[in-house]
Image (tube, rainbow, N blue to C red):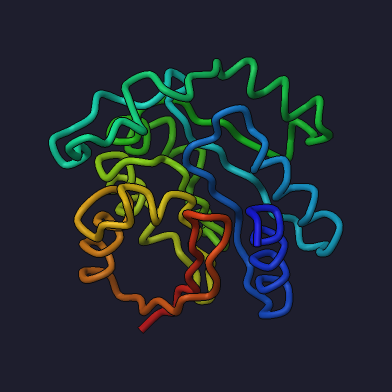
Length: 205
């Protein structure tokens, strides 16, 4: 199953399970996956979901000690840098109306807690959360931020689950393991996709 197929099944699940809420994506790069999600959603569902995209737009931050692994050079500072204006243009060019999405700029440990971000989001709930931010240090603030917004039955997608050679003590997998032990949700594996991705269904305890 590739990521597009995974996105279809995730959004199909939300429709069939009557799970309401918006779509959040952390790590946009050029915007391809958020466009894919929007197109699939509009084809299969008439619930008006809004799409929120979060990115530094200056690439990955400096790698922390927790994000280093001997002889593993897959990720590096500044990788995946694309300007916010370019991503915005890509979304518009690919058919997303400008009122269907909101882009929020900045490194997550700062931008997610800025007054402007909190004002934009208000009490918005999350039904689909797509985390494609590669690093432990980036995933932790995303997960902490999204926890109070998750609805029962939300889908949580990790593109980079099996990076770092599949180790549990590195990358987003480590972030999820630490975070999942302290939140009031249980997680059911829904599907694996591509060579590195996984999806979970989030259920309130």
